[in-house]
Amino acid sequence: MSTHPPTGHAHTADLVVFGGTGDLSMRKLLPALYHSDRDGRLSPETRVIAMSRGGLTDADFRGKVDAEVRDRVPVDDPAVWQRFLGRLHHVSVDVGGADRSGWNALSRTLAGHEPRDRVFYLASPPRTFGPFCRELAEAGLVTPRSRVVLEKPLGHDLPSAQRINDEVGAIFEERQIFRIDHYLGKETVQNLLVLRFANAFLEPVWNSLWIDHVQITAAETVGTPGRRGYYDHAGALRDMVQNHLLQLLTLTAMEPPARNDREAIRDEKVKVLQALRPIAGTEAHRFTVRGQYVGAGDMPGYLDEPASTPPTDASRQVETFTAIRAEVKNWRWAGVPFYLRTGKRMPYRRSEIVVQFKDVPHSIFPGGTPNRLVLRLQPEEGIELHIMAKEPGAGEVTLKPVPMSLSFGKTFTARVPEAYERLLTDVLDGNPTLFMRRDEVEAAWRWIDPILDAWKADPALPEPYPAGTTGPAGAHELLGRSGRAWHEEEM
Image (cartoon, rainbow, N blue to C red; front, top):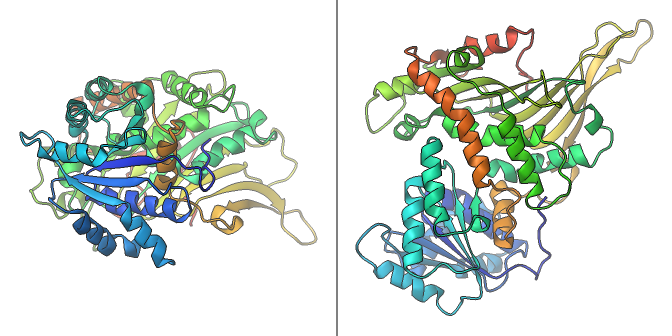
């Protein structure tokens, strides 16, 4: 697990953000870095250097951040905000262009600080990862203390992911590469490991003898306005399942590591991905569902969302919803289905892991329901254990499921850090535990690619579902065939 260094012991680093004026930087990275500065986790000498084609001066960039980021963060001490702005610099670089002046300017900015850690954060499309790293090396800017952070998606299939890994790996050693998935920075995800491995009562029942099935859901109320060009070629399977949902599955299903170190946890996660039962050919029709939202009420359908280009054949075939019945073929989980579900334009915004236990072997009370553990990642991070209790009153015993709740926001007085805040701290500390290793990324694609191939070979279009509903009928049939149902508890 990651830990924050005490105030005054943070590593000094130059954090270079390629795409530093873009949406991700303004919405997530810079607010996270400000919070780290505010909480004393950045050394006084640490700098943030944004790279873009914008032609901005340092003063221009600081003004842009002051205008666009200040309202996103609590500025309760103007001196801290001014200190943070003072860390910010900007260098204009044309990656892939003939003009080398930008690289020379970056070299001058970094010159004299070679002993520092250098972190290159690529907040840019994956096609730029290889060229950026190559030009970075050609400019002589990669040092033994350098690290590179890669944002998702890492390719669109196994060959493209391998190509990116080869290109980046030609410049950086694997220990220097941090493939980020912001879900792994969420407090609930990290508490999942603590819940399992630091509490004696839970691990003995964390297996097929006591667990009926597991549901992992990432539901969004938003559609894809303005993003259809991207989503046409991504879809829910690539955009959410290959990374976010499979990461949650590995942490839920992994074996206890021998120790809490940087590689032991990642070793166990890879074993889970390698144990996933393949879904290929006609089995994709049995174990997967794909859907696309259509207009309902005042909500437009996917094909009617505002976009710069009209819908294409790819638009009609892309899934905005998918549900999958996965199986981990090992001793612990034999016979336990893992249901994965993600979709846009659903009636609620919720990301959660639901562990549904089996019923008691012999119930002496009528009306009982099996226990359920719910780990919620959003909108409010927390853990709920649903147990059976007797309703107060005389006469016949009446049972009622009662949640034992842990809300991080209500239980702990300390501010719960955002996912990017924690992950950036780990990058600056050089701690790769919550980041994906090359073999982990490629194992995920090896499982996803046969599903994509089966869908491509199937002439049927995704099953329509009205915007604002819980998905297509096929998703409910996927569980209904075995007498199960999705967890749709109201927030």
